[in-house]
Length: 338
Ligand code: ADP
Ligand code: MG
Image (cartoon, rainbow, N blue to C red):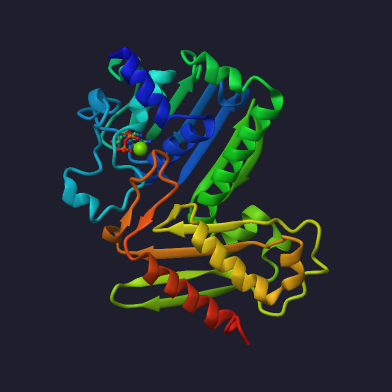
C-alpha cells in the first residue's frame, strides 16, 4: 500500500511548480489576500507557502491530508457549481507521500495557531502551539526524498533555474487574474518577484509585465445568453505599430476559464489567427505580444478534472465558446477576410 500511495502521489505531484500551484490554490480557496512563497534550493530543500486566509478548523485538521478529504465539495452535485480551485482532496495527501510536510494554521476562532507535523500517509505525527497569525502556512521539506530518479532529474543548475522560472510564470498568471491578491516569491532569502494589490486586470498586467507589454493593449468584452458566456480580455489595438516596440516585447497568451489559467490550444490558435491578419510581419517572425482572454461560463459546462494538474479543461459547449471568442475578435479587429 505504501508503494501504491507513492506511485499515485508522484503522478499528482510532479515538480516544484506543481506543489506551489496546489498550495497557492488552497490559499486562494481560503480567501487569502496575501500569499508568500519561499523556496530554498529551488524548492527542493524547502517550499513554504504562507497565507492570511480562513485557516483550517480543529475538526478538519486530522483529516486535511487524508487522501480524498476535501472541505470544498460534499457531493457530485457540488461539482456542477464548482467555484473553488480544489475539489479532489488529493494535493496535501500526495505531497505528504513525497516530502516532509508541516501545516501551521489559525482560524478566527482559535486563540493561537497550531503546527501539525504530518507523516507520509497524511496523519498527524505531532502538534504544538505556534506564534503565527491567522491563516495557514504549509512547509514542504525534502521534496522527492524518496524518488531518487526524479530528484536526479533536477540535479543540474539549468533544470533548477528553469523550474524557478516556471514558478514565476505560474504566479504571473494568478497575479493577472487576481488583481487584489498580494504575492511574493522568495528564493534563498532573496525576493525574486512580487506583486502588490491592484484594482483591475489591466493594472495587474501592468504590474506583472511592465509598461511596454501593456502599452498597446485595449480591453474588449463580449457577452451572450443561452448558454451564458462572457469573454473579455486585452488585445493589441488594431493598427498599432509594433515594429518600434520590438525586442523587449514579451510573448504570452494568457487564457483563463472561470479564473483558472488553462492551456487551450484552439483558443490560442484562434487569437493568433486574428492577430496574424492584423500584423502579418510579426506573425511571419513568429512574434506575438501579450494577449489576455478571460472566459466565464457556467461551472456545470466545464470539466476541470481531465488532468491531475487541472491545466487542461474540457468545455462542454466548446464550439459555442469558440464562436463567442470569434465574435469578440471580429468585433475588435473586424472580419479577418476583409
Ligand atoms: P482540495 O483543495 O481538493 O480540497 P487539498 O488536499 O489541496 O484538497 O486540501 C485538503 C483540505 O485541506 C482542503 O479541502 C481544506 O479544507 C484544507 N486546506 C488546505 N490548505 C489550506 C489553506 N491554505 N487554508 C485553508 N484550508 C486549507
Ligand atoms: Mg487543493
